[in-house]
Length: 577
Image: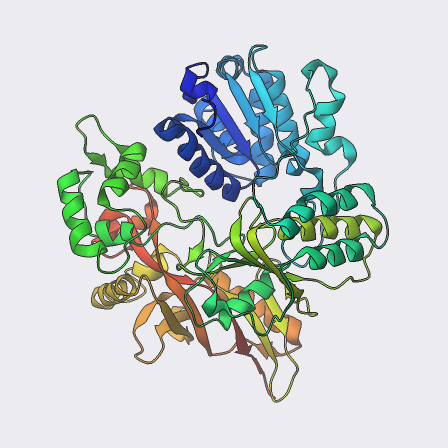
């Protein structure tokens, strides 16, 4: 039986005047997919985006000098000034017919203030729906090792909306569990959740951990024997910390992907395969389809075909004559957060998804493996309650099967840039496990820069990456004395140079070396770097970097890059010893 028709299908709401806001890009992608399954192509007109993306739409549309400078919070504060003081923005907001706010329990600080200010300026006829579950409020903590302090009660959006009587919100409890029909998993959503909400205090983490274990399908999962190569594609393998997920990935020889902050929303490799040598401003569908048939089908075909790919591209940069404006497409794809309809949510290949609980918020899977921390001594009751909610979120991702086990007891660390590392016992020389593959590690100039390597080498490297877009690959890093001792990425076994990594990577390795001791220096070579296939990097037509690149990439704007994702052993060395 089909569900009742929605207000959009009935014509009571215009899709273009319906806004949906969520905290994460993960949740946005899920909402878009479900919305399309419910109302069809009308879903594409609904403005579904994160708070930051909605804020940028307002900022760029009503401030001629808008730019993404300063911190994320500073950018939000600039938008706040427009929302509260610009009459044109007020007119824009009064046209909204319905606003849906998802994951409201995680909207705190300036983002919560911005949503409250937007709600206050909507038309009285505008409907507002706010979804929240306070048992899943986890963003006072990060997915990394360092804990963040919680927010004051008056900084939480839910508390502010409840206290502002003029908003006239009505509380409605949603009682039907749609995610699962498995009895044990349903009890986690109901009974375990009730324990969490009603029994705060010292020892709550242990009680919830035990309750999750009792209701899971398997509570004897071994972190050293996860059986990743036997898991169905799309299964979630969840860890508390990114260093744990990265290490599990490092020793997984089967295709898989990562879901970690900084590793998502990457562009698929077929974009570079099709367009790396297209230097004109416009391309017709016939030419695009021919390129797809010749270049994509054999090496990196996604789950959709050329017709669907063309539709997605023309939504972003279509022209009146039904061609594609490549300059406009490049401007859209070069943004810090590319559109979810073309970006891939996971970083890697088809297979199980390894990630943190934080980064998987909003996702679900038939099969979930959850590595749970021990009931540790917490610095405060607030810390224990926060970690308990993190655990609860991880346990509620499963639709059919939840398997749980003990996480690693070591924690790892991170340096100022956020790069993970873990020191190893000193034997002959100082060593550490170090993260490689952060967004800043290798870029367009490092891959196809004219001053970094010759055009013939660049062409061979780009072809090599394209041909291996859908498979695991292995590399070494070698210091290059000619290029300021930055590291060159070399294909293991045949010495093909893929490109030059960034000075940021070199500086971060120096920072890890300083942690390891006086006189310790970075290595000359780092082996065993993994790449989970390839992806596309895009720069805009007017980006100054183009002048530094080889042709045809300087004109096309599309470059193929390895999806580096490694947490590998690095042997440092000590000067004069």
